Image: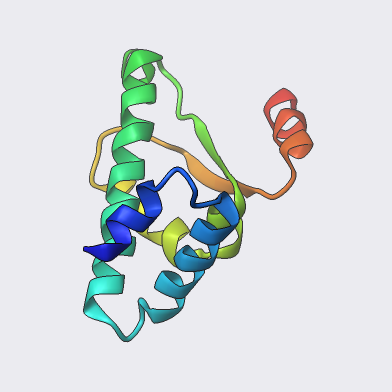
Length: 113
């Protein structure tokens, strides 16, 4: 419960939050609470992705989009990437595949090709 106040404190920096996230990811294999945090995060991210897919009406189109996931946690924390993919698999988004985008400029190139 102390962690919530710390995270939302305006004086807490992104770097400090990133360090805490790294600890949670490291503990997730052995600590049930850390594992639940990662699992819930993957589910919530999948819900956000599904909201975007719904707004873009992917289900109404005859396409199977490729999902590009970028950012330090997706690229460096396989457990979060996998938790998100598992949650996406329970939806009907019809994602053809998901790729990690390590470099933002590469994302534009992948989308253009």
